[in-house]
Length: 93
Image (tube, one colour):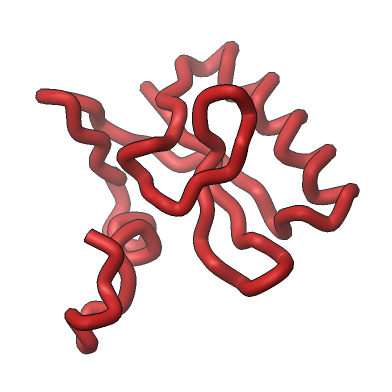
């Protein structure tokens, strides 16, 4: 199953995703969609960024990618990706 690496940026707590080129991005749509073997390597890289105090608590999430869109499979991760559910003016989507 395809995955994306996510974490929180240590500087401001923002939800971030590991994008192409191993850089952290704030949009799920800019995240690198990884197959299992790629995901393991990317998670190792993310943990190095955690050791350098760039991000905190990196982990992989399951995603579905179709029609050029990336969608988090779990509700919790969909909420993290799009922002608050009660204040639509703060959403990132």
